[in-house]
Image (cartoon, rainbow, N blue to C red; front, side, top):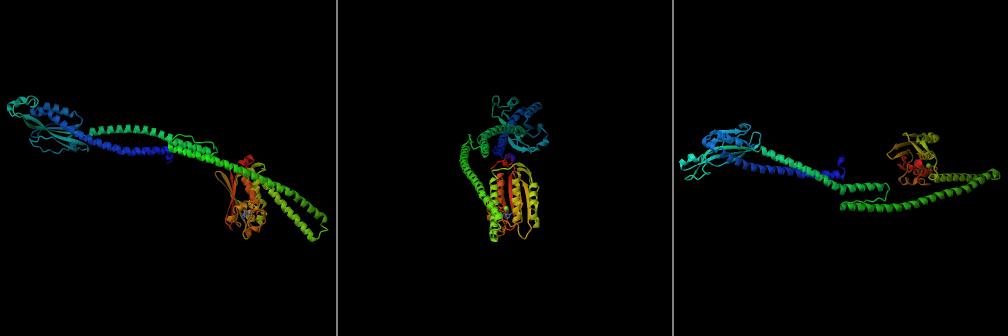
Length: 518
Ligand SMILES: Nc1ncnc2c1ncn2[C@@H]1O[C@H](COP(=O)(O)OP(=O)(O)O)[C@@H](O)[C@H]1O
Ligand SMILES: [Mg+2]
């Protein structure tokens, strides 16, 4: 659910959810309450309608006037809520009836009544479709004077309207009206009202949500987004940026903490830079020192070498065997020392004296290295293979050759005596860098030595390793080379079971194209 990731959409979802949670039972409650009230009102209404209908048809019943009955009934049926009307005389004979949709639809129970029963009765029933209706049963009443002579004239008007006849009038049931009022129309009206209310409610809710969301955005989402933006700026090195936002108390305190953090970060970075500068200067001084010492040592050594070879040439005859042997050992030592000094000088130059860059096919470089070592490899029955096709990169060819030379040479040198060396060179392209490795099945490296072997002159003191000659400069040179490209080197190894040296090389190694890089 990607769409629910942002604060804004989550809040919208929560908002709509809570509106629905309130609205659904709310609407149901209003609906059922309205139906109750409406049913009650409709009952009273049906009652009144029946009574006025009884009054309407009174003369018709009294005088047996069909015309009068019909016009009275038609008038009552003009009301769309009235679904049937049934007028009977006092003996129960039906005088006139009207029904909407046929009598079959309205199953009416018979109502027992007596001539003296003047009560009006009401019941709620259901029609064939299940719709409720009110069935009202009411008497048509006339009153007869005790003096029958007056009755003939006064019956035309009903007795109570005009003058009081002599003697007490006597109420008499002259017929009945049975009338049905359906709830269907009222239900439809309630529903219609309810739906239009819901529509209005939804419109209001929509407005409300837009309004509250814009507030939320203003006070919550926007400040957060802004802060994220500024955090991005800061992460990309623009430490002068600060968060300036308006918003709620919490957001403000967040912004304050954020700014405070950036302040601290800025001062820490400044301190670190100072320390870094000092370290860099010290390292430069060391490099200079290394260069100067190597250089200064070289001159007297050259001198000694010259003298020794001169002695050897001119005075060899006058020296006995012992003397010659000593002289020879001096020359050998001087030579070794000169080689070492040359290597140190070379090492000191890796970062400072960059060589020409070109597009270098590393397959070709590694193949050449293997070729140069092929005698050593084959004489021991070993193999060296390039596992994956290596990339072509823009770099200093000789440095990369030196790098692979050192690693492959070590893999060969530190192999087991009783097992032919198997060397594998591989590569993997990752998102941001290339990862090279040189793997062997040699003597392996103990955990405690895995860091230190990359330092100059550090060699492993194990019995297997110390059998092999070396100066302890190779890996230091490799490390310097790869660091000049912003890369890294490390080793994974299990003692006694071989080692794998990994080299990561950033793809955008700035130094690669632009020469100098620290
Ligand atoms: N492939 C390897 N297997 C086991 N040990 C190794 C391997 N490569 C390097 N080493 C250890 O790391 C030390 C430093 O290596 P290096 O700097 O090349 O110096 P050197 O080879 O001249 O001794 C070595 O003396 C050796 O003990
Ligand atoms: Mg070495």
